[in-house]
Image (cartoon, rainbow, N blue to C red; front, side, top):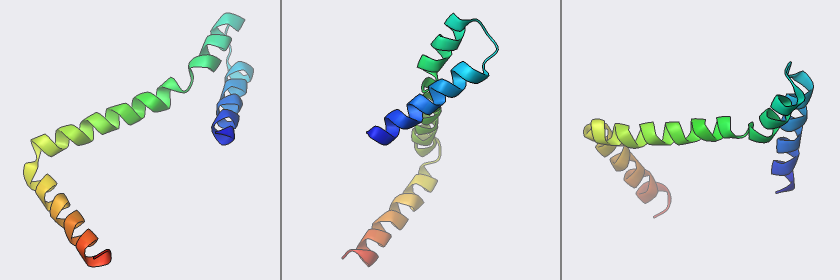
Length: 75
């Protein structure tokens, strides 16, 4: 947890230091900067879920490979 707070603090300080804006905008950016990577992760997750519906054959192949890998390496 300390590592996450350190990364957040580093990003917030960078946003305050490097942004060419009013102080209120700088502080808002510093507080909200983790929303960008979180939005990226949510978007990629939704696209991966949609690809399983759009391309069921590929999803079946991936599932078969995963089951085979589990069976081969674990069992």
